[in-house]
Image (cartoon, rainbow, N blue to C red; front, side):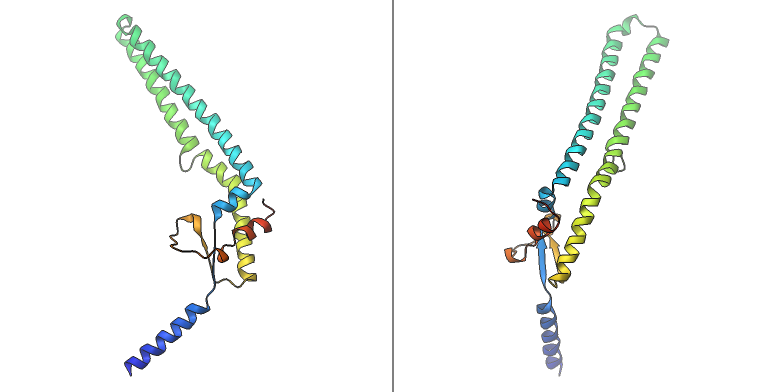
Length: 169
């Protein structure tokens, strides 16, 4: 009796599993085919470069202050030394705050990235849903999101269809 139940359960599970339709796509590939993504990425790179230059300039300023302090230290009174040290430490704190404000996980660059990239990702997601419904896919995997796929049938790759549907190249 147990064997019959196990056999029936195996047959049911097998038929359900075989009825499912799968597809995969490569979001990195799709994004790289989208002109608006490239434009957004260039904009982000430009902004990040400007902020990085600002940070590097402040680092040089602090380094110059420190070198000047080292050179003049023998001539300074204790009060003057303490004032210079305080000034240098203050500049270092400002630099760390600037770095955090611009490049931290909650910083301006992250927010700007969400502002520019999120609408594109939302459009991709909408197209994936449309294609999956039209072709009756039960599951669509993203090949570039770190999901391990040992083997993929190229016939199941719908990345080009998504690019085409979105007007990409």
